[in-house]
Amino acid sequence: MVAHLGDGEWAVIDSCRTARGTREPAALRYLADIAVDPSAVKLVVATHWHDDHIKGLAAVFSAAPQAEFVYAAALDQEEFYAVVETHDERSAAGDYSSGVREMRTILKELDERGMKAKPAFQDMLVARVGRSEVHALSPSPKTYWRAQQFFRPYLIPGATATIPRPNRNDLSIVLWIECADQLVLLGGDLEGIADPGVGWQGVLAALVPAGRKASLFKVPHHGSAGADHPETWVQLLEGDVPAGVTPYTRLVDPLPTAGDRARINTATPNALIAGGPLGRVRRESLVRRMIGSVAIVEPRRATGPLGQIRFRAPIGSGGPAAWAPAVSGPAGPL
Amino acid sequence: MTTFAEDVANGEADEPQQRESTADKQQENRESAPRSSLAAIQIPDAPLPAVNRANGREPSTSAALDPALSPGSWPGNPRAVASDASEQPEFRLRAMPVIDPSRVRIRGAALRLRRGSFVRKQEWVGRVEQVLEESFLVSLTDTTNPNEEEVAELSMEEVSARDRELVQPGAIFYWWIGYRDAEDGQRRSESSLRFRRPVTVTDDERQAALVRARRLRERVGGVVPRIAEPPPEV
Picture 1 (cartoon, each protein chain N blue to C red):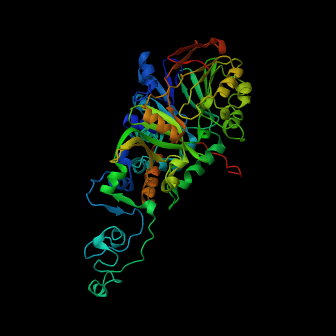
Picture 2 (tube, chains in turn red, green; picture 1 turned 30 degrees about the vertical axis):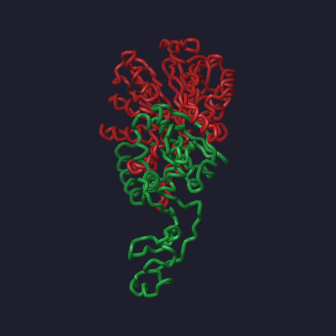
Picture 3 (cartoon, helix red, strand yellow; picture 1 turned 180 degrees about the vertical axis):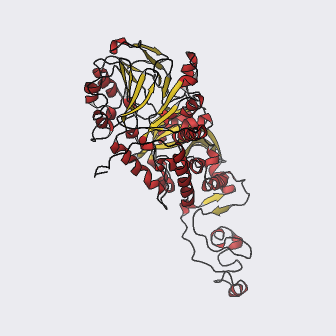
């Protein structure tokens, strides 16, 4: 996600590639397309270290020499750094995902610049950039401690050294951006709606919103039910809020599911999705036959064509109606 | 749910062959070794009896098929030729292994007859994403068609018994589909799943990483506000 925070200053929140098989981060491509120099990026945020959110983020940070780097406080722990520092040993075995590689590259870049990372924590003012204030609504205190316990076993001598998988969406940062009269809620990948003090229950207990509601919403975790707390729509979002959903297709049952689409469309009629339908790969008959005898669910493409959603509103305007949506590629109504 | 596939497609990950463990390479070598005109048998992973130091052969396994090495005929067998034992005092014949015929690999002419040459029509590098009761969900990088990333659900029955314990989230495997033209004229389609053995980090490596981690965090780590004591249930 790329956000203009006013006065020509920008933030990049998470990263993905422009297309299959390319290395170019979509954020840098977009900035180049609208003739914005990457040096205008003042804030680079890794909401969490999941592969689909961090791919290319090191390249973004490298291209933005004036940017601060923000990550979840739950990762600002010795235990996580140790995981990152075993990258060399583990990467030879292919056990690390690109998320660890991206994080390691960014931390080394910070080291070379003599800069410090900025850990984001619930109820924290992360930065003032342009005309905006960027607040974090998660991770919560309870999540912080759980993260420590998640990483710690990896450091115990004699452990089997199974790498902690970055499958903890409860570590994700949720951002609340205030730009003049517009409020934006970026839900990251935060999951969890049942556990008090964790996930969206933790966000709903955060102090920042205090009765104010966002007029633009990035739907968390690809629209999945496990990330959709009904009270979020009531307490934190304006009615009929424009919402953006990013698909996640590297699952046998891609997100959002049909049920997810129906639920979100009930919550708001203004939801858009940034991806298109998936296709199948053409194969020889022998291969098709053998696949059929081996696979319970036959291989299908993990990624479809990528689209783009853009919401623009004049600074100083307010409310959901001020946002003008535009889509490109296969992006469109949810 | 992986970008490992993207890593492979983008050349950011090591080539699969480079990531294979020694055990994998040995397995590969076994399959690709030049065929010998003489048949021989090999028992992978089974405890072999002591090698006959006089001729370097492996008496217990070869003897069964090689007429020149009928049981008890090789020099150094203490059961057959007592004098040999005194001439080879260092030799100790251990208990004969119990041979499971299903684990015996046959090389040479017999192998050609049975297996022919394998032609790969499709190849993936996969990663296990989720393990279910009788199946597992995987992400696949199609190395036959670069840049194709796929997802699938595979049956646990397709995994060999010795690889079954390796089916864990994050495990890397190779999946080939192809055929063999056997010398008997038959063409047989085949599918093969093979899991890469995980490489673990040693305690020394981990300790060294922890030292580096502390130093790096001192330099680039941020300031985390004092966080309340964890709740009792954490």
